[in-house]
Image 1 (cartoon, rainbow, N blue to C red):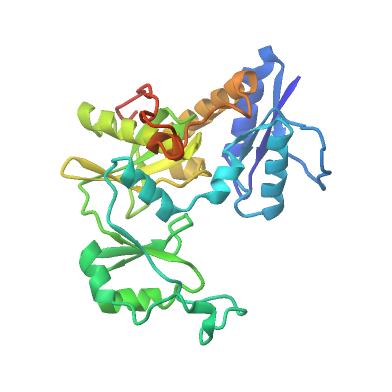
Image 2 (image 1 turned 30 degrees about the horizontal axis):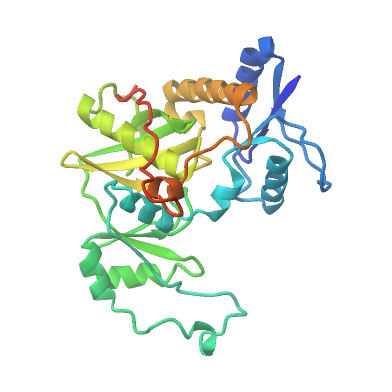
Length: 330
């Protein structure tokens, strides 16, 4: 008997539907699914689960520590807790730019505020240069621009600014978060892609203003759909994520990847629509069953170091090719 565990927080529709579907599909292979239950973890404690789907450890430090230990004991965790802990959006923008994707111009900004044990009037911040030339930063990314956290999600602390005055007013309220300033893409189409197992990509029309998924078939041309799928696959290959949402703002036929560090994506029925909810539940259930039967913790997930040839011997060439899947929005 193999067990699949789900770790989640304030979710209502996805957890019961997912667990039920895994139990239905996994029955013939002796696979069951349940909520992970923890009450203290002993060092060296054997793994209770073959696979764990993690949708909450970014908010609960104990869960993240447990998941790292579970990997050590042989559990396959989606998403890998070591990589997720290390990533941030600014670094990932830089990686994807180096890998050749269309990425908006982005600047990492010094924080507006700091913890109480950091004395801003002493030598704690000796490496920062003031005053900041805000006009020069805006000249680089263009006006309007987007101010948003370098690590975060859920559209929290995201501001569209049109000039220096609006930028400073928004920035003054961002303490203690580290922020990025990013080029605004004046898009004519916007796509949010659900991803499953890195290569299975489901592009969906999305309205970022009202934050709504739209069930529009053939939203993308075949050529544009193919590029969105390839770019999304490349992102997942580089970051190692098997459960993610990737957003593209499309301007004049160019899909700019503007948000792709969402390893605990929103799967709630009332927000992703009934149509896509059924797709997500089915594909996630099949993914975890496949990993229970065939996945290993040492499975070589390509990462950006390999894809860029960092630390590799001379002659190393790029990343392995990815199989395309489902280029059109379903």
